Structure formats: structure tokens, C-alpha cells
Length: 304
Image (cartoon, rainbow, N blue to C red; front, side, top):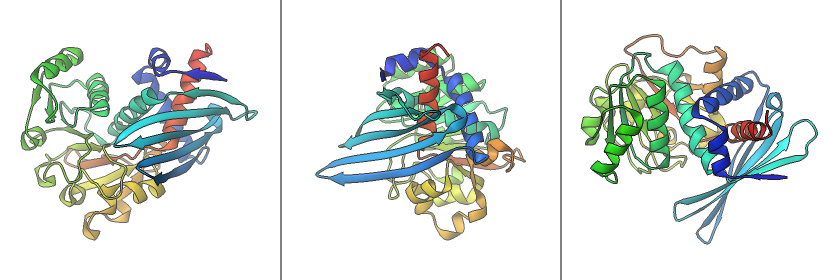
């Protein structure tokens, strides 16, 4: 059984590859041709062990992601099996897959929920996921400006990112970042809402990806109340884990407003129908994403 490092994944799989692979994985799931396991967390003595997995026969793989969390720091491993004969194929370090898949799914969701003429990106949080989203959204949209709200980014780092993306970038307060922004990404570890939902511009798309814990949230009730749709990866897991949804007031989030990404990809649910609609994508991270992308990396490294 092969062990695949993060560097090997980065060399074999581009962001565009990840977007295509994950779109097809969600299409399979939406057509009931793939299945997922909900995340299970086990904790003692300050150590948390989490597992989640998926079976994707159309991509010839099944597998599970296992990771530890200590003091907010994650260490990931993915185990990949053949869906044809059940044999173990590979193990993965999986930090690269986690980074790639989360941003790729946000871009996929934006394809159905964001305005195609979106030009301004507001980014809250500038850690691994924030930087991955910045790069993938800059490549997917003809952005005119990126606004970053983070206490941990220096002007020198901002200049480096702007040169890498080829898009002007400025550091902002929360209010400045969201004012008139077409695309808003929240990739923080915030415990409470990052900005006032009433400040969202008409037509904005929001990708909230920073938390999968039921007691934390990045979006307030006003943002959810104003949203025409709230897309999630998988209702059972999202409604259990996403604090943005779990903590929402009853009048902020009707059941009919929540749609699955797979339903959007399959065309069973329409995405944006009006340029003025506010749309939200709430991600918690699901096993389908990790296993699908691990399968793609493994095939590429076998020469497939």
C-alpha cells in the first residue's frame, strides 16, 4: 500500500482538477450513486479523534478520513480502498486534500449561487483555508479587488498575496470588507458572527467555511434571514454540526430554504434566479470530498 504525501498531492492535482472531481462526486451523491458517513468525534483528556468517510463506486474508491485535534491543531490521514475488490490502495497525509477540497467546493457552490459578474471578494480569516479560497476564487472570477479582514495579516503579506493573485488587495475592517462585496468568504475560528448580516449587499454570495462546531457561528440571523437559499453539503451532518444553522432563530432559517449541493449539481434544485438574491453556502466538510479527491490523486500518481 502506497503512502502519499501532501507534496505529492500538490504536484498531481490542480485546483481546477479538484473542482471537476468534486462536482462529479456531488453529482453521484445527488443521484444516490454514492454514500457518506457522518463525522464521529471521540474526545478524552484534551485529545479529539474524528472520523468520516464515503463510498463512491463511480470513481472506484471508498475510504475514510481520520484526524486528531489538540489545542485547535489538526493532523489528518486518509485511508483509501478500491471499490472494485476492496483492497487498500493508499494512505495520505491529507492536509493538502483538506485545503484543496474545501475551497474547491466553495467555488462549485458559487457557480450555482453567485452572480457570474462578481468582481469583489471579501475574505474573513487568512489561515490555510483563507489563502486557499483567495487563490481559487481569484482564478475562477475576474476580480477587481480583494478585501481581507484579519488581525494576523501584515501589509507585507497582503502585498505578496496580491502579486500572487494578480488582483489588488487591501486590509479592511469587517464593515469595510463586506460593504458592496459580491463574494464573501468566512474562513475564521470566530465564536460569534463576523459582520452584520444587514450589511450584505444585494446579490452577494457568502461561503461560510470556518466552523463545523454546533456552538460557534460566523453568520448572524440577519444574514440567514436575508438569504434566498442556504446550500449545504449534506443535510444530516450540516444540521447537526453547523452552528450557523443550529443556533439560528426559527424565523431565520425555514426548512425549505436549505438545499444540498448535490441537488444543485444534478439540476433538481435551481440556484440563483435573480441578480438581487443573497445566497449562502455553509460548509462543514464531508467525507465524500476527502475520498473523491484522494481517489483522483491516487489515480494521477498511478499514471491514470
